[in-house]
Image (cartoon, rainbow, N blue to C red):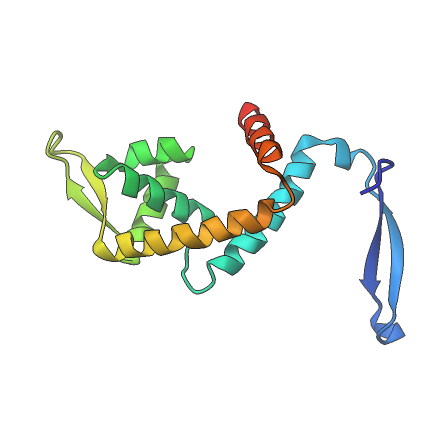
Length: 161
């Protein structure tokens, strides 16, 4: 987008048949707002992520939960929610979904009889491995225009926010 915040968008005009009309859109200060630019990037990321995950029923949040359970067998649901930055109810909803998909089991904690630890099922382990490869390809597609130094800088800057 040009520095002045104006972009040219191609709009299909059904009345004009297959002709494409161009309209200039003034975005004002939006391109200068971190939140706006991040959200636009997130939309592109999610679009590609969901295309890569087509047919799996896995969202970015569920993928993150799967990885955390895989790497932390026996993690309690509350700790999973904290690690993901979601409320307890959100963590419960994710775990319920993963359980319904046959990917995660709740097992009594040997240290606390009131708590349950989360473990991947064999199906969950297999799917997690498959998804990691798909997500790695997705990540490569999304970041292909960045060299290694730019990627490190982007990651560092995003983590500072």
